[in-house]
Image (tube, rainbow, N blue to C red):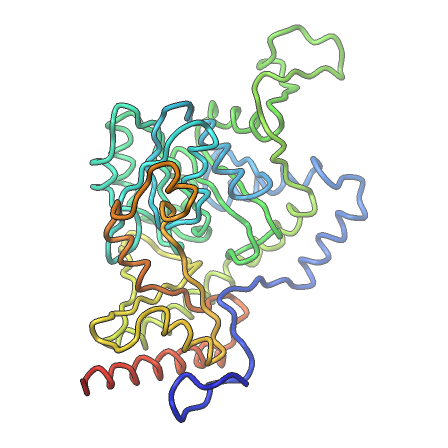
Length: 402
């Protein structure tokens, strides 16, 4: 057993609780097995079935599933027309793919700061960052809470920009009663194993725009089409197809699609359990002066992918790094989401420097992600609360004794 976090104490539990974990049941396994016994392992009927299910779930007119969330963002940026020299505004508190998608297209990411309490991108900072070179905004629904879609949509329409909603965290969330996925010009999803539903990997782009939809289909599959309305030459047989754009192999397998179809059947259960855990965390942690609980806007009925706990350094004699280590000693395995994207060496070499987004940088120094997933038992949840509370109270008292 690891040494206790508190002098003279003992860990709350002997087994580890990880920050995220998938939930796979027999129905999920059988769905994949059925495909493996069928004639179609890829480009088969499950792809269309999954796309239809995503449209039904969100209210979007079109869905294009693909190999992963990064591919979804790349396809969306291409469909938005991002090219050499164009600027794409996004948040630094996100996985690198939200910014990298601009670089893939020859564009340049521009980072706008976050709201210090919701942690989502600040619409006013977005508008202030717009130049004549701005082509699109990639707004990340961080932790699963919807961004301020009304304000961002208004800004994008005013300036003739494409709004790409990076919804990697957001499936199951609604904004003003509408499912995220049906509101922005394009919304991307990710189905990585730590997300609310998983296909092992996988992604999707949702849109209501038929022109964008047709572009997304091309970019997913090498830029190749069998649609005669998109061809430049007369077909000379039933086998005929054309490459009309430079696309990629971003296809999803039917095995992944089958798993996701089964997972989406459980989304209401996943959503409810995550909301229960978040409510329990909020109830306990909001009582502790040394901790700050993420604020949620009333427009967002959130299915939380991440639970972010923020340390208030001036009220504790412990910083985030020490708090992280203390929780690990309690067998509560946390994570940090995210390192500001422009901190990375690759971005430093492109000329980005610290100081661009003060709110995001301060958040990074003070935050950690607590365990949050469907399969957490009530005992698991209480063990996390016990460990966090024990550490916070101990180091708050030490601060008072200074």
